[in-house]
Image: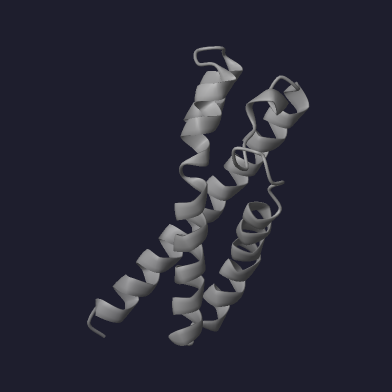
Length: 116
């Protein structure tokens, strides 16, 4: 979100913004897929079903990158303000999702550890 807002305010150029964002796409896909599989293995069905659509979306976005592109984020598409706004909305939704998951995991951890 910070990198995209820096691009929106013209603090950085589109090429450096895309290179910063693209280097985190694959680790995000891998980590989210691993967390989703771990939730399936540990039989946490609700959290698994909550994570599954986001994991599928991340994998779909990564697989659908046309050959020849430098990654999911391509710098010449950012000159279109609508494209920048859509990436910003997606980043905000992901931030909200990860905050929700953080508090759910924290609650689950505390409820398991706390004495009854």
